Length: 409
Image 1 (cartoon, rainbow, N blue to C red):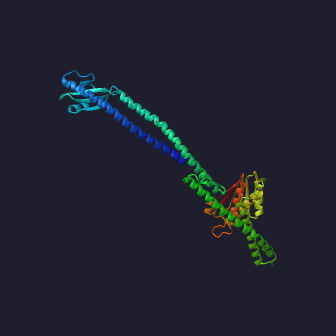
Image 2: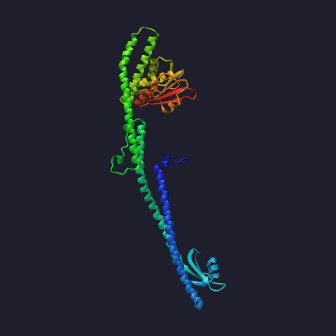
Image 3: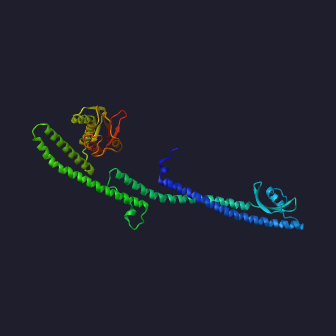
């Protein structure tokens, strides 16, 4: 049997622990009180019965009439107590007679008979039963109040922990401005507990991470901007070179450098969050066919179900163009782009995506097996998809090949 998800939470575990401990403490105190009061009540009843037995013994030995509650081997005398009296000892015992409790006291009368006294034990039995009921009914509200107070205290802690976890998830999702701002960490006069220490550590980590990422983004943007001017001059100079194989090689490398520079600038803009949507209505099937034509590749387009979407045409073309280019560069044909409603898939029939990419997404400047490129195409596609509010996922087909799926909002 699988427990519900809330059963594993700290609040549920704490509530269960408090309940168990309260019940155990109430049971222990109840047992101690019950034993103490019962011992005292039984001792008083025993003393009374033994005193009556002493009076009856004195009357029997004097030949006088026995008291009304005394007799020789009376009916109802417990057998164990009679045997104790015939052995020459005196003793007491509580016994039931037709559901009526009696405190018996017995001693030897002669060799074959026991002298016994029966004292009504009803009132003492009622006192003990009433005490047990009082202990039970007072324990229930006490446990309830303790549980509520404990749950309130635990909930305050768990609420702070949930807030810290929420901030951690926001930071993981890219919101580096998120902070816990725990009241205890901002007020040095208040005592600092473990939750406050975790919150302070998380805020410090987020601030440090944000500073490092901002420095990296500024460095990337500055390098890309500084490269644009000399690359423009280099491109113009390459165009003036005489035709030939060396010129083609120079022009190819200059074009690769210009593409890399523009990609770096685009990534820096995406990292900085400065991208803004320019939405318009677009037929998704028509847009996909236009992307394939512009790529100049042999890509099959399948429009299973065409729809109109409200999106940024330039960014969507950038995402699909990068996916198609990546499929041809790193995979094998046939490459198929399929439009089915608001879901667009690009599939090749190569060796598939690397395991790290399927598990964690594309990483900048990381390629597998000496593949060409800088690993920025898919990174840009993911960034632009996020700007569009779309979800881009990567998987490998069962029968081979890489499958990229873009789901539009």
